[in-house]
Length: 324
Ligand code: BT5
Image (cartoon, helix red, strand yellow):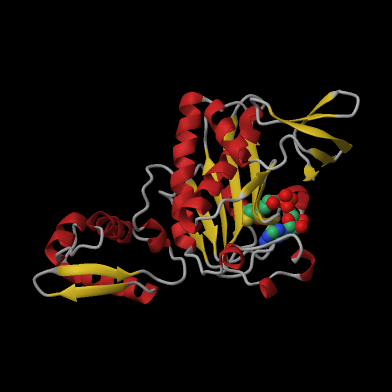
């Protein structure tokens, strides 16, 4: 969208619900008051409710029910994450779009978000159900200056950031199931998909995909997911603002990402462990090279899962589906 529209939203963010005069806006944006009026009209069409009072100016009274790019920007308290937004009504997969943008050199923290995915995917080319206007289907491009071996840690950082966002907005606390699931009452609420563009010694981009079930009702899930999937609305009995959640996820992710870059994985490992469900339990890890069963001991400094089998042998698991 136009840089002026983005600046207008930033100005309203700073105003925090107070009036901004037409003249003040014209000064900030460097355009005429007539041009401002046109931009305000466009925001109204998008679903924003704006009050306009002579001698006072404009203020935002309410935001659109659907997510819109401007609503995502309004009040977003980040400096890197979500500063560039690609908002799509419908796409096959936000991962695919984000990969493309990353190859074209998009900045660190670029967000791709869609109202619907027609071919959303999980790990190992599995399908991710992403119906329109109900969930959060987003991918972030991160560009940390790190070796590729560090990438699995990002799945765990994302899980902590999302878990915190759910606590902040919905006042319920999800469990994390290693490596990439968030659960409520044992059912999946969020899946995370971390993909890489890398040379042998350095990451060019991490594409962090987050799929979150927010306002689906039970009948919105296909039959095969009924036993294993749930949504925040089902669990809380309330409709939840998707854009508020997205903003909180971005803010938390940025906070934890910066903490990670400064202090390493140790503080995040502690946070992660506080949400983990499988630690200390007997589990089966289904990996592409076979099953391993035993006791989940914990995760290493790299974010790798350690399992002790019946013979006391310790296995390191890099990726698997866990059964408890
Ligand atoms: C995941 O894979 O959990 C990662 C999901 C990542 C989705 C996001 S959405 C934005 C971005 N764009 C994409 O195209 N993908 C990412 P995995 O652990 O492999 O789990 C996949 C399995 O979860 C499927 O085989 C189903 O059994 C189940 N599943 C599919 N859709 C679901 C949903 N909406 N809610 C809960 N479970 C689901």
